[in-house]
Image 1 (cartoon, rainbow, N blue to C red):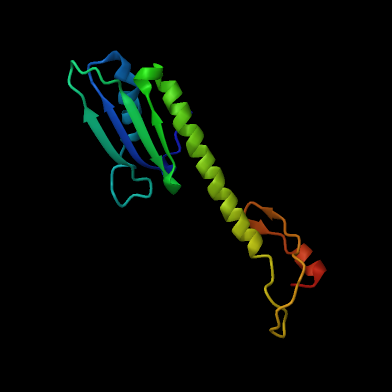
Image 2: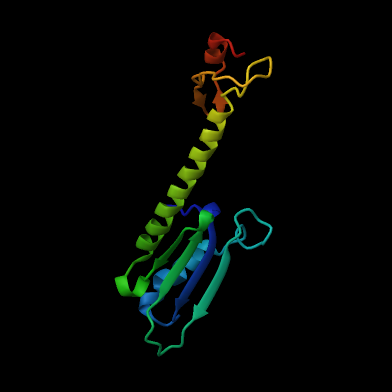
Length: 150
């Protein structure tokens, strides 16, 4: 499963590189740290902060991921003994939800473009909303023509 990188704004992790429980943190960091997420002017830029714990630290590894819109998840990788697949699934699940919300907002804006605000002589009037079919980001204007708006 892939991680929707364009929805992630920041990635914070704290782990001991020598601990066996830290393996999912290291692998998730390697997945997100790539040339497309590195430059600050990139659309898929991710602010990555890593805290390396000492070898004899008793603190368990954890990951905090921030998404667009202010949503944030904190994964206690060591406490829950998560594997890399579990971490990727959790991050992907939230990322897909955010992508779906963004696509619904775009679709609502497209539907709003179908509604006329006033009639031809400039007076505000209650005009019924035409039924628009939006398929692949295109508006079907045949229903508008039947209603007399086009």
